[in-house]
Length: 310
Image (cartoon, rainbow, N blue to C red; front, side, top):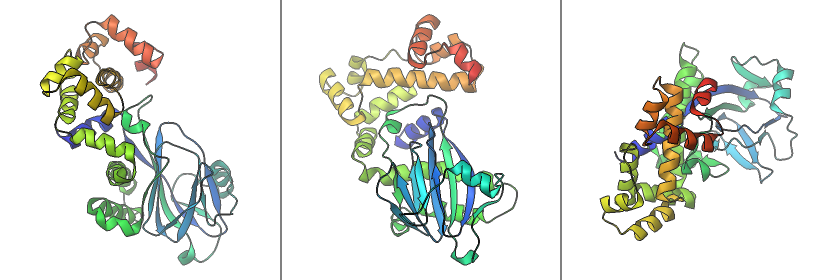
């Protein structure tokens, strides 16, 4: 299992799923406030024109055609045609325009060649999904058109999204949502160099010893790992391993292992028909009762209750 395999395991377990929520055709003056939403990452790709984005009342970020912004923690933000534009709530804009969720969200009237056209979507995670990656994401990730050449895979995917958004054939929206999931991961990798915490985490994934310990955890979750046994596997002293793991990953090795076991268990409860006993064994617990206690302590409900409402 390499770094990409670990990332794949993480985002599969966290239930990363894309969804397209609208295409826009905005003619000035316009503005909209997108509300806070827990457990989602929203993205806006400008196809034509320009827009300003303000996140958490911060300075406006100006976007032009080809620019992409991701709001990874579901924060409330404003989309504006100018920094001083008013921004009514999204629900109000949808009501006034009569938008039903199909086709293009049109605001205002004017020359279609002068409108701001965007692809807007979001990526959701499984309920109560958590991982150090999600905890340290910045308030936004930006990929300017001028920087896309440095990231050819991301650039190609964004070009495909742009092409597909104007394709009314069956399956166009579905392909966009799948592509957006790849965009999230690639944008995360592209933005790592500008986010010290993400840079440290990726360094941990790629570190010959800490990376190997993560691979062992993800590949052998049912093993009775201890700090000592993991340190031995990667040929480090117990104290040095624990310190280095915490330094790079942001949590200690046993805290990471415990949390990941429960995240994997939550995914199995949602996605499989395995019994609680089987899931407990699969995720490294000695008994169903010890698993139930740990799971209830983390999520505030027993595994069976979690499965019923998932």
